[in-house]
Image (cartoon, rainbow, N blue to C red; front, side, top):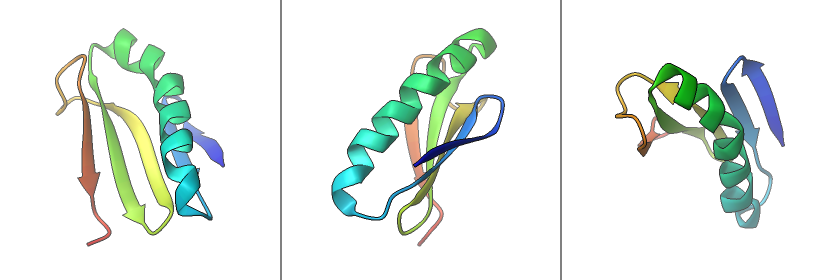
Amino acid sequence: MIKMTQPGQFRITVTHPSQIDAELCAAELLVRPYAHDARQGILVTRLDHGKYTVAPDASVPYGVTDERDTAL
């Protein structure tokens, strides 16, 4: 499930590991216009098992998608 939490930021919740790639790819496509407008890269953050955020981030170079895992 993909939910916009604020303009350009999406929260992804999956219940089965097989859903992760498809949901994250779909969310990244939704974020791209926001990242393009802000000239920022995209940050995918794992918050917990099956919970992620995808958003533009100034610390990520424009045109790049980076991943962080805060669930460790």
